[in-house]
Amino acid sequence: MGRYILKRLAQMIPIVIGVSIIVFLLLSLSPGDPAKMILGLNAKEQELQMMREQLGLNDPIPVQYFNYMKKVVVGDFGTSYSTKQSVIEMIGVRLPPTLILAFGSLFTILIVAIPLGIALAVKQNSPFDNIMRVVSLFFAAMPGFWSGILMIILFSVHLGWLPANGFDTPSAMIMPIICSSIAGWAVNSRITRASMLDVIRQDYIRTARAKGLKESIVIRKHALKNALLPTITSVGMAVGGCFGGSVIMEMLFGINGMGKMMIDALRQKDIPTIMAGVIITSVIIAVANLLTDLAYSFVDPRIRSMYARRKQRKEVAGHGAN
Image (cartoon, rainbow, N blue to C red):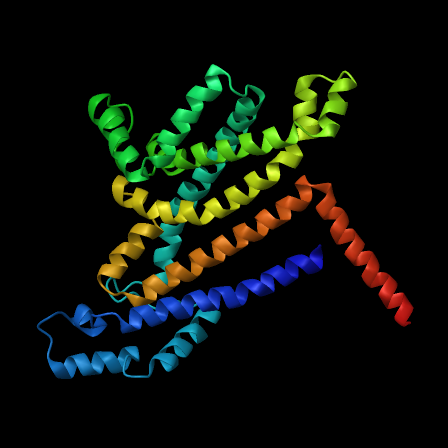
């Protein structure tokens, strides 16, 4: 397992580099002159040329990328073109709200979707199952920003229960997290339901029931683990969606996070800020996907035994060579 983790961590490096190359190339070829954005539209051509030289914008794009990544390796993400602040300091302020929003949404999806999916599978074709099928389709089809607007109108404007912007108090976190996760509840509850229905029809579940075990024990100890694999896959893929959705939620609720920072930087073609946000976000998503793969081995003993057999075969091959 340790070798597998190291191998996956090594695979993350070309992924992050590939993402950074694509984004850097798109930013470099897009319209707009960072020197003009820094000095203003009234700057003289001589001043603009000096600023371009200072920023290294006169170098070929591959040289610019290499020089930038050389600094990133030692933890220097440069200085923002627009705010003149250190990019790493800006991220230190903006990253925590985005992490709380993204992983809070992910945690909410887990604690709502999995129990709901189990309940729907156990009560298959009941009125509760039929009603929740319609409700799930409704919420899965509703865009996050629209549900956010409706919640602001209801809970902030009319009822006055929750603040409409900010993210500095627990009450301010409720609406953004719910809006980010509401579609995930619908989708993952349906996936869990379908997976549970497939598992509880298996022969070993019928055998467990024939032994006289309580239904709660049959569901929890025998059916749930095998049914969780598709849900884990879906939740792992939802990590990227939570980070992508956080951009909309941060703009809608006025949250001072990474998504809002990158949108503001994109408007001003602030390349160091955009690149830092993309690299850090890609690393977080890659690590989350690694944790998703590791979760398979904890849920399904067959995957753990597969790693054990591989290790034994390597040991036998090593002894045979000796």
